[in-house]
Length: 74
Image (cartoon, rainbow, N blue to C red; front, side, top):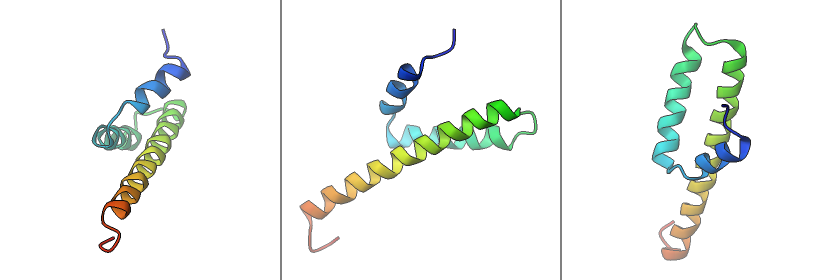
């Protein structure tokens, strides 16, 4: 049975940045494979873009926290 969008979103939200980066690396490897079909590639690409966006937001949040904790150093 295919995963529902809500299940995928909840799973993605529960990933740490390290887990997200590892998943992105796995997606890249799969996309580089000549055996990956177009439909699968599009799904993986979409997932990867979403994960990258989540990582960027996480890093921006950490940067803001660092600015608050050490405003003169950041």
